[in-house]
Length: 142
Image (cartoon, rainbow, N blue to C red; front, side):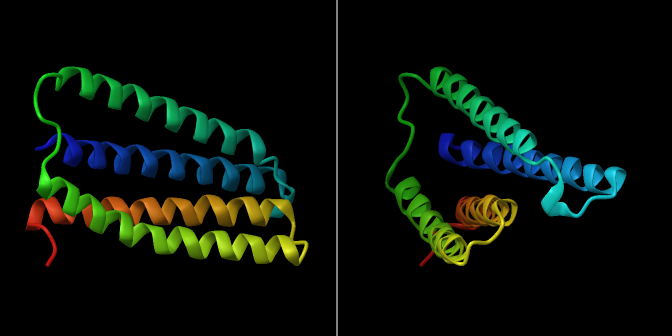
């Protein structure tokens, strides 16, 4: 497994775990307090998910990079596969940003704006990782 392939798998697993954990906290809070989702205290869990995810990925990336020192990390094949992966996810992220800008213009509740952005960027990274991992496993896209 190449360096880039391994990083995509780690990011996919880590992102998915934190996304599920965040939503589990929100659903449990809403159910236990008998509140609608928009009234649940969501800011803390979202910030913790982002902080823990970013820090954990940075540490795993740094350790992987340190272990791979002195060896080529990527080649032309990696570049092509990563480019296709980024293209797959960037469209989703772009649509997410557009949706959140429209929601802000329409004065939507902050909970919904933040969570649309959170879910949309997660789906974009999921698409990026999925296409990239598929590219490594099945060969680069045509």
